[in-house]
Image (cartoon, rainbow, N blue to C red; front, side, top):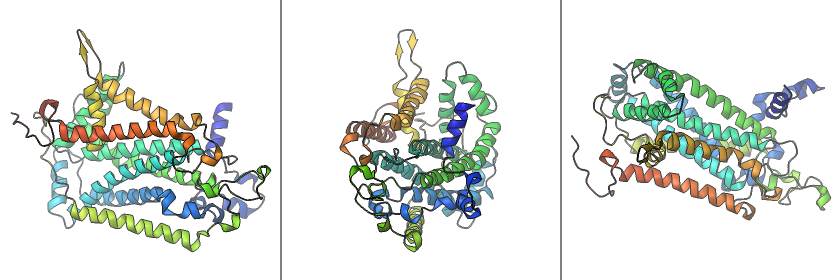
Length: 418
């Protein structure tokens, strides 16, 4: 119980309403109030687009768009193997603006993946997961929350990819469940549990539907809410002009690393909220413009007896599929399980490394909030190499993998496969 109490105290540190002597104090500690920073948290640097890029706000806006368009699609979608595809097709071609709602939802899902990754990169490259030399902060908890949000975002995109029950969705789900099956000891049982049987069918579709529209959005709302609240309780943005300096170092009381005084902080109203509103409107407009100019056609209905060749996972998971294919190696009588190594072990190691970065980061407090500080050179290089490798694998698999997973140059014509 002692370990659990200490961990729970860290998770909700900053919440101590029982200790408040005044009712106004207790009200001020209410969860919802702490989404918007106080005046002293909104500094010139954290206010600027140059530093934060407002990526967290953009992600929240895109998620709101996803919830709204997803709810509208629920009014027409039928989670049935026989009707799912045709209900989506009716939405696409018959109902007024149905194509717009569906395409906006799908494009927003892709945008959310991109901006969550960019937000993770911004936090990593600025060392914001440490919160510098601030007292009683838990930046590492918010960093881990961000990693969980990345996983949830990918899970939402994948489950939504399956719901139309077309060829790419069906065979993408087949690839995913086969990776689950590759887990030693429990793989077969876990795949049976996910499918609700031995094959992809009605039980699997209704499970995916429930997870996509209920479980994953609920978890995402909870973690986004906590992510904002935790950042607020830890003192706002971990940028250069928001990090206090010890007066013992010869600085004035209240001065920050950049030399700013507390009274130089920008006021949150109306400037800060105005900036948030403009970013929200710009994000919405950008998503709508992409929807108007980028077409996302519906594929052929699912055919369990005729696989796509090549059968490829969604673009954001192509790097994972290539890892699975590349690590499936036979040497004599021995065979390396690529589904387990490439689909589970390598991604698991990458996530573990990301989660442990705050504990092994030795950069000084003044490096927090500084882009590409030299004290973090090696870990920044390693992170960049991993990121570029994933991006290259996505492009390589998308453009260069043809029938039977054979390599083709992008300009080569694929042979007909019967």
